[in-house]
Length: 98
Figure (cartoon, rainbow, N blue to C red):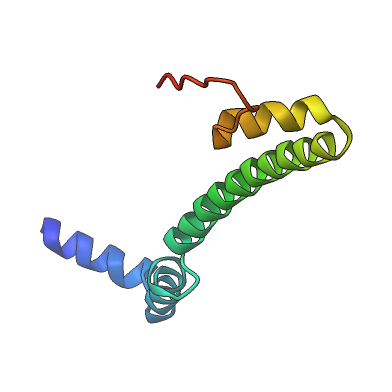
């Protein structure tokens, strides 16, 4: 008796058109090339790339300011040369601590 009621309800409210519409919707949302999961993954990747671009721009600005200071400030140039390339004046001892 219970099975008959369920079968009767299904025949009344669930049609072939509804099943086809649900199948197409499921395909578009989950199995398509532009599915919800892929869209979410792409959005995460975009956010990651935006963060990397911001870091790169900050680094670029640092090196641009350093470059301009090297052109104008002789003391900065001397400091950089001494620190990075271990250069020295004549008759001067340099000790490197790491």
